[in-house]
Image 1 (cartoon, rainbow, N blue to C red):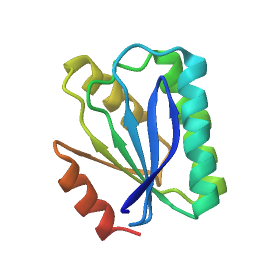
Image 2 (cartoon, rainbow, N blue to C red; image 1 turned 30 degrees about the horizontal axis):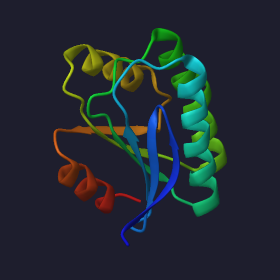
Image 3 (cartoon, rainbow, N blue to C red; image 1 turned 180 degrees about the horizontal axis):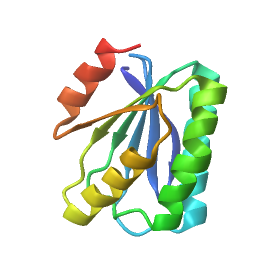
Length: 134
């Protein structure tokens, strides 16, 4: 089995892929700050328990993240993921909603130095890129 379901919530599903990365498969719909934070905390727990240092975030039909969530991700979660788990690479499979793409750009532009994002239109492209980085 190439990947194993680790966690599921209204935010979506988190998988561990045997290729050595954590995949966040986001659900559609607006989410509260608490649900978003809990989802990311579960992702960090999986990164720590597996030693993975790469993330694939599959946005699909995810609603744009509220500004407060964007701020928390860039100022709190990403620095902790970098420090505690050594995470450095995140492949993003873009969502269809143009407003979602803007909120993603906001997170990408505000992220700490040393955290590398690449944005893709398809899952295979994102997986190929992750396979090429350590």
